Amino acid sequence: MEDIEKKNKKEIPKFTWVVLIILGCIDLLRGIMHTIFIDEAIALFAHFDLSGPMAGDLMLQMSAFGISNLITGAMFIIIALKARQMADIALICIPVAYLIGIIAIKINNIVPQSDLLGQYGMMVYLGVSIITFIATRVKMWLENKKK
Image 1: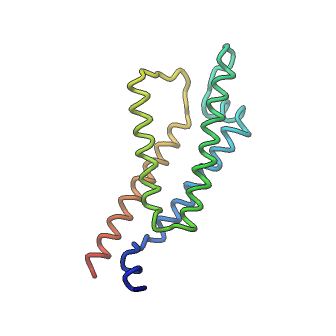
Image 2: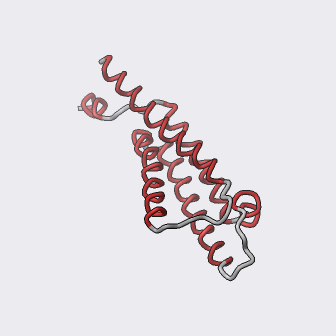
Image 3: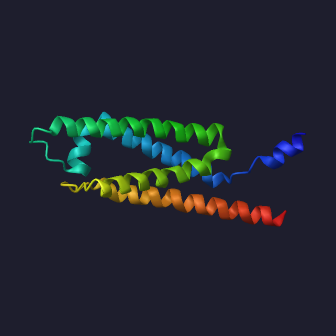
């Protein structure tokens, strides 16, 4: 019985869950920047104009995004440490969620007014999650092919 359970449980390469821990730490850092150090994040990365009447709403939205970063960061670390067999699924959820968001931004004709310098870091973040997912699946496929 134990052999069947072991056979059905997929072996995730170590690099997969290590990358997920790193991305989780990055999300925690992003969450802290968007919530606790919001003024610094706006000045350094977002370059929002906070002189208008919507400044409070903009900061509220940024803080809400930071809260979700804190949640995803913690969840990624927990998955990597306690449910490693799901690490690749967690990785692919990142670009899928952002793709949905990008489509929604386009559908709603949202055009940013600020530099949003954080977008370049996000492209790297998304690229790392996609490449790690693909590398994980290729490695697992090659290992299963050997058996």
